Length: 98
Image 1 (cartoon, rainbow, N blue to C red):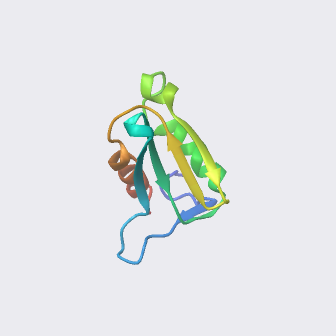
Image 2: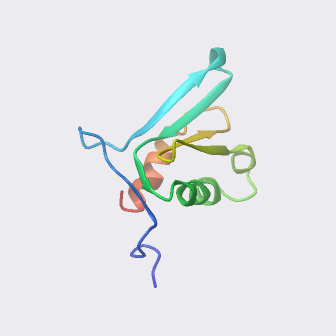
C-alpha cells in the first residue's frame, strides 16, 4: 500500500482562510525559535514522530537539534535550529495531502 494514499491517524484542519495552521514564534530575544502546528485532530503524537523523522535529512544537524511536544492534545510545538523553517513544515504537510 502506498503511503501517499494510506489513511493517517491524524488530520490537520485548515483555518477559516483556507491556510494551514502553521505559525512561527520567536522568543527570548531571538534565541528560541518555535513552530506551532495547531488544530491537529486525532493522534498528534503520531504526527510529531513523522515530522521528527522526515522533516530534515537523517543525520543532519537540523534533524539532531529538532525537539517537539504536544500541547493540549491538539497543538504541536517544534523547537530546533535557528532559521526560518516554517515553510518547510507547511510544505511537508501539503505534500501529504493536508
